[in-house]
Length: 617
Image (spheres, rainbow, N blue to C red):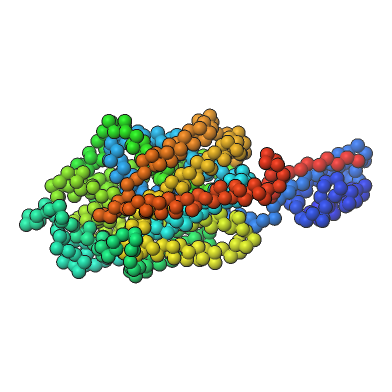
């Protein structure tokens, strides 16, 4: 800037530095706020370029005010961003939750409410968060000073919810790692009933075992390996007495968090490279398992059971509730991840196309996973000479760790398929963990840049340690009960409520017109009427429908033979409220400390501005 002023003073002796400062509004006392100055030349008498300004001549000075903050990190390649978003959206729920919910709610008929909920609810929310993060280039906390500062508590609530998820979600990967290590044994340990953890009720019930009789009290070796060796839930009577920490699972979880730390400690530059493996490998394994499952005897029975439509179930409210919840938790808006990932994009990146591509890939992956799961379940039904419904009675992680593990054990080349399957489970979980913690890290670094910007590695290390210590309760003998409690109560209702407030704040307070103008400034075109209507009316109704349904029909929580007592429901709601309470608490804090009137808008600092000053003689 000083060089620019010096050139101006030499070009025009009629203007001193102080005069130029008074006309342009720039003063050395204000600090360096000018990045570039463009000055037009003048023509002196005789046609040459003169050093003085002729009378009546005009000169244009363009002053661009920029922020002095450190330049924001960006993705090395566009594919790094896409694979990171796909890896975040495609998680363990796509493999176990969607197939189970699909066949439970009418098979092929369930695809109708699922697609409707995706088009009118899930995808608009997905698109909105990508656009917000890319335009404002901020995490889930500091972004609210640009939108509506009184809602800043939403960002803090999102960070707490992300921590709760990290407490239990990574434990599932620790279980998968335990299975992966056990897969290297000469004989898969969940195929026999002669191990130290097996009971007298253990039976291998396959069509080839003609001398085995199956009763209601019988258990499979895969079930006993999962419940008595991996989880050891038989040593805990319930949530009131969790028991000791399993040192095997503690070591497995420590290894998982070590991988997580060294993948995200340097930012998106490192995590963007890791996802090239963790996001693509699961698709390769799914393809291999699909081809293998399609060649198994009885596979067609599973596919028919998976897709056979039951149109009468569409009259049930439960089907629509499940469809709305599934698409919401599958795409994952509201966890701060999409805001964080999009904030590292170039400003003019086409986030509209990214939203359509990644959400479509996510939904297609869920549909593909159903074929992978049900071809194997059809094979199990054929081997056991039972119906597919009887085989597919388990839901959640049990579907993977009991039913699918047992099916793999009875395939040719069982060890190979067990290794790649549980490696796929770990990869799916790692992507989501990278994303969830990156959302928290970006939010905190953007909110406290002067304290944390140069200490990212230490902050990430501390965050990972907190997550590991918080997960210790899920590593106890009753840890599976804690995982179920967190999954049902601590995160689901809270994050849906937070997203509802986020949509209302953006659409009603910030304004849909202003938001669409922001998108037009980035992409060159404004969102159409469909997106506007979805953001203003349909998405809030979509989220409110899920919340009311959850409150009207609270889930009956049960795991194995343990029925959760009423006090655990109160405990679960208290954990959920502990994160959501940040929203009203910050509103009160903001109103008590804000200056000016309630309707007075705040001026956002750090925005780039272009000023054109015409200087006359």
